[in-house]
Length: 137
Image (cartoon, rainbow, N blue to C red):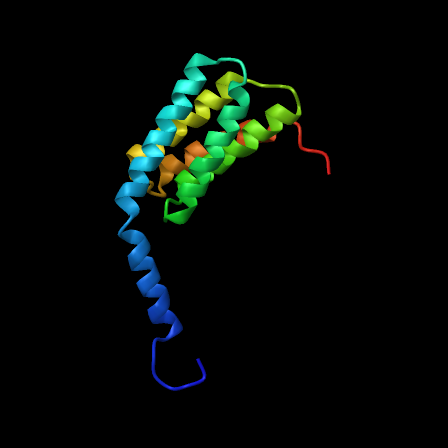
């Protein structure tokens, strides 16, 4: 790093972003598959499904965070926060999960664009989170 020549930080960042972008299509397919699993868990509502929702939502948010998914990541994070609070507060509400999943589906289908629609959806999700009891600590 102290020697002249070589790559600049900006060049290294551009190369890293280009490498990540080459995996974007596979990442989006993986996100769609995880969303389908979340929707199936929500529809089945079997015993232990609440923990599965949090686990899958967390995996979804992790993957969305690798790519520039803007409002998609924010919606996934909101689902994580919602499910975490509902589990901790013993106040599980399936409609809250369903609304999140529909919002995630809409944002994903719209190409993860930050626009007025996604801002309205995220505002609605924030209202759901705000109504849930906060974690102590």
